[in-house]
Structures are given as structure tokens and as C-alpha cells.
Image 1 (cartoon, helix red, strand yellow):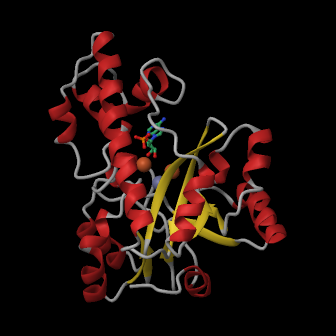
Image 2: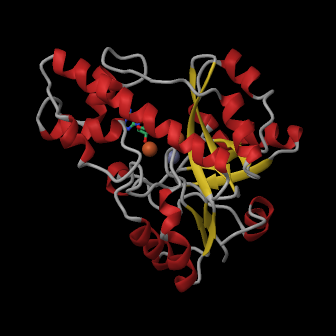
Length: 270
Ligand code: AMP
Ligand code: FE
Ligand code: FE
Ligand code: ZN
């Protein structure tokens, strides 16, 4: 049976498998297709296409962009864009600068609370899009907190005392850039959004689709979003949000799309 997981992370952002390991793992568990959606970077696509081809896996082009809509943090999945498009490359570059600056500011805040972490230690944690999961891991390693969860809940989660968001790149602009790059913009994991009023307005933006099938959420949680997709004539995507051992309870392929949907989303798979 054809199954394609359209949401997973590699070591180019906060996943723990390299693109090579991720694609081999996808093959091992019998997936037919995959899309690597690292946070704010397309670095995985330097190596992934050749490996996917060798393994006989269909590879869709993707990324998960961080955006802000009326102060609400919204993740937007970009699918099937042109990897060489200058506007997409520029967006990745802006996020890279944003992350460097705001990671520095977060480390400064942690240090003021007596939890020093050197920037060099953080940079050694990842390859490209380094973020809060890496910081949380170091906090745990240094025994400043007992768990990643505690790091987020008490110190670095949205709205917590050490959190700094950095440059806010709006959802509107992100969608527009994805469209300029010939891609499709999907709302990632809508089930995790809170603030009903803002969601209502967010749904008025020119998205192409919505991630109705997500992680291990049961069908009853998906119903609401499938209904919205049908009303708006949006595409429906699905994926696990696999992060490797950084989120041990989520397995690759636990959410997926079928062959017909894969080809509706990806006109130009690799
Ligand atoms: P960043 O992109 O650096 O702002 O970090 C956000 C990422 O941290 C999300 O994409 C998740 O992978 C992860 N994350 C967010 N909240 C939590 C949490 N409470 N516990 C563990 N990981 C989280
Ligand atoms: Fe993540
Ligand atoms: Fe996300
Ligand atoms: Zn994700």
C-alpha cells in the first residue's frame, strides 16, 4: 500500500536522524514517499534527492516555516516549491539570521538566571536550523532542568521568561513567498493552535491546504479540519512530525497520505 509521510525533521533542524538515515528508515518501514520538512531550512535537499532516487522513494520538496499571525506562532508547511527560487532562499537566510540573534538573546536570559550555556556549545548541537529543542537538551544535560518539558514549560516556551521570538515574519508574507517560489502553503498541525478568534482570521489567508492528519491524533480530532478543508476546497495533507529520539513517542509514518493525494500536492517530486 502506498503511504507517504509529509512531515518529518532531520538533523538539518531539530530531528536526530541525518537526511540519509531518515530516508533509509522510511524505506525500511515500507513508505513509498516522503517529504522532509525541516524548520526554516532546505539544507536536507542538498543530499536527499540522490539518496531517495537510489532507494526508489518518491521525495516531495518541503520545509516548515515559522511565522507569526497577530502574535500567534503559526507553522506553515511549504510543499512543491522550486529549490532554487531566490525568494525561498532569501526567506531561509532571514530565518537563519533570526535564529542566530534570538538564540543568543535566549542564552543571555538563561545566563542571567544562573544557567549559562556557551554559544559554541549550542552551535555544536546541530547542522543548520538550531533552535529551542537544542537549547532545552543542553539545559537538561547541564542539569538546570530535569526534562526538555520542564525547559519549555518554565523557561523557554512561548511567553516564558527566557523566550525571545526574534524577527517576526508574518504568515501573510510567508504564504506570499511560498507562492512566489511556485509552492503550496499548508497550515501545519492546526489541532495545536489555540485562540479561536485568531484561527478564524488565519483561515481567511490564501492557504492551499491544511495538515488534517497529524502525528497520532485520532480521527475525531481531524474531523473539524477536514470539514474546513472541504468547505474551502483546500488540499489535505498528513504527516507524523517525526523528530527521531527528540520525540520518542512519534514514529515515522504514523500519519501519511495516499498516492492520489501525494500527486495532487507534488507536481514535481524528485
Ligand atoms: P524553535 O523553532 O526554535 O522556536 O523551537 C520550536 C520547536 O520546539 C517546535 O517545532 C518543536 O519541535 C519544539 N517544541 C515546542 N514546544 C515544545 C515542548 N513543550 N516540548 C518539547 N519540544 C517542544
Ligand atoms: Fe521541531
Ligand atoms: Fe511544527
Ligand atoms: Zn514539524
